[in-house]
Amino acid sequence: MKMKDKLVLVIDDDPDIVYTIKEICSFVPCRAVTALSGMEGLELFKEHRPQLVIVDYHMANWNGIKTVGEIRKIDDAVSILVLTADERQEVSDRFMEAGATDFSVKPISGPDLISRIKLNFRINEMQLQNKEIEKSVYIEKGVSSATLSILTDYLQKQEKELTIREISDGVGLAYQTVHRYINYLSKNGLVKSIQTHGKIGRPQKYYKII
Image 1 (spheres, rainbow, N blue to C red):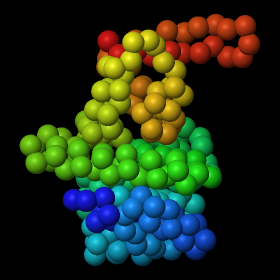
Image 2 (image 1 turned 120 degrees about the vertical axis):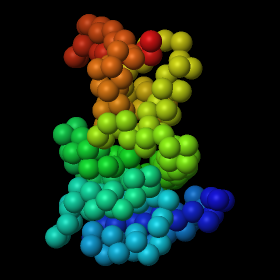
Image 3 (image 1 turned 90 degrees about the horizontal axis):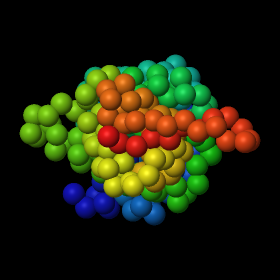
Image 4 (image 1 turned 180 degrees about the vertical axis):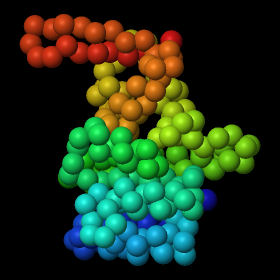
């Protein structure tokens, strides 16, 4: 499918934000449909089957986490990008466990959102390919095989250890998303970590794939 034919579903209860994101989508370029609530968004999802959903956290009736969970009951391959002003890791983790693909803190610039949309389209394509070969879309709750593949491919090309922030900037995923996946890789012995103690600030952890 060509980029211009791909569809984004934008779910946010702020009409101004919905309008802005829809305009940004035209520069990707891709198509967009919009909803002002989670319930409306779910109905539009069933009708249009987009390749990407962009959803807000704080909304009346259904919040973003509830909305993500309801969409995941229907489709386990669509990319879901969360936009929220709440940057706490625990919020990101709750979204990932509900089925979100990526997480971004508001405000996000137009160019950054365009890059994130393109990356999440790529993740969607990889998820669909995994389904075709009967490979599990999710390795465990909150960890998708496609996102993990993008991250590990990037790490394998790096010659030195990197911080989570450096990995986030390099791969184009949110810090909170990378943090969760690095924890998964570390837990399974797939990355090594090195902690350094600088003269100023907190100790830094650097990671390299094994």
